[in-house]
Length: 349
Image (cartoon, rainbow, N blue to C red):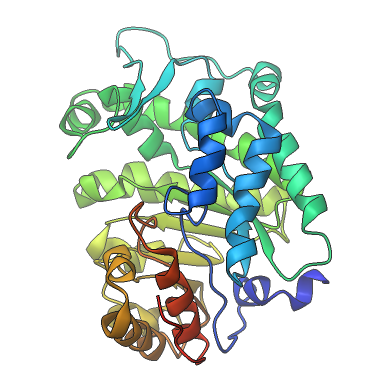
């Protein structure tokens, strides 16, 4: 299918499409039994990300079950620091562990050749997906973690409820943290540039931990770097749309609309009524549905879908979740959601 007729790309170029195109953050994942079967074949999670045959398979699995409008590369945001030489491991039931950076030591260098050697399997996965999806209606999305979210893991040493250690360093060691953000921004731009070269038709920046920062820090460490990355990608790839997801920034969402992105993804706490008028003539809006509502299913899911469709009706809209799909989501509820979005008969779960 030509790019100009793909529903998601139409919305990302400013057109309203009814019903809106749909994809889901973490649409390839543990809620699918076929994913769990493939995951069991990999030695560990990073091996799954770095094995193109397996990564292609799990990327395409949700498209076989559901009529979604996009495939998103199966990988992880922490492959970027891993490619910079920073030790990263994933502990079952605990999440990622990352070697904590020491502000008294030099930052990890960015060597593009070494970086690309490390991430060559990811680029190969993207190229294989582009071939597999050629002529189809789904848009192929690449992604990366945004600089602050990557920095938060590196400063904290892993995941955290509030990233208090990372926030403290952002206040106490601003020169070090700003330099880290600049180094990560350089790597993220390079990573997305290579994904686009391999076949990505759109890319998304995940700033999953933007919401842990107060507004002064969020402007400096989230919005400003996102704006610079969007501008640089537009310079290199003017026809490849960029989606930004500064999760949890609340009152700063109107400022996110001015970053030059093709779409801004909304988390579950965003107030869309306050954004619709500001978004007119600007970026598309994506997301908003609470992943827990998708777990609940049934009438409450249908009502929430209809509410979101109504409130975002005036603007170009991509239907999605306000964060990643939860592992205990019944796959049948995804089918219910898609039917509700498209005004079709709601199937039993």
